[in-house]
Amino acid sequence: MSARDRLISATVAQLRRFGVAGTSVSGILEDSGLARRTLYLNFPAGKPE
Image (cartoon, rainbow, N blue to C red; front, side, top):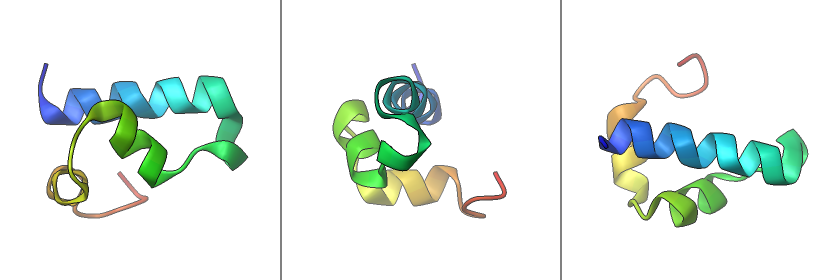
């Protein structure tokens, strides 16, 4: 699974568990096991992506 796919899967899991208000970048990174830099490398445009 690519880093991008891991980030997306972790995001979906966080949203299902905690909802929009409870989902955080830190939680997504913890669930995915990836570094913050990897997030920004895979989604350089931020929220629009």
